[in-house]
Image (tube, rainbow, N blue to C red; front, side, top):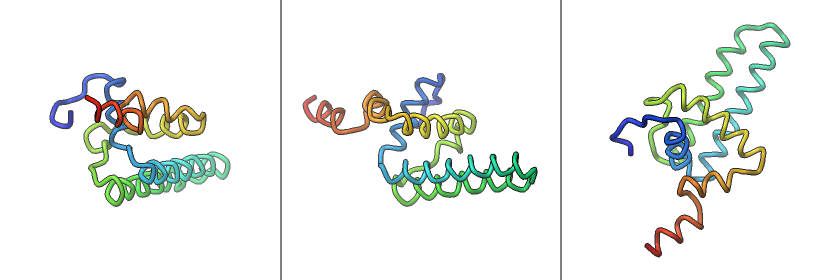
Length: 120
């Protein structure tokens, strides 16, 4: 799927989840997204625009560390910047809501999907 251009967001979401299959990669994303949210709140409350720049740096740096150090893949941001940004926040929300396991399984990530592939 990497070679072909993804045409729809639902298709991208499953691709995104597969690119974030390792828990360590997702943990780096949660950390970065948390820092981004804190910076955005600080920018609004303190009316300091430099927090906006900090939100970008502190959001992407941990996420990219997760990709390069843990997942060992190229961040989707480089090919799909808008969908990737939306999905970073969606991943965070799905994780907080407790629905991540179901979403990962639907994308083909996790113990249940690995067992199905092994039986195929």
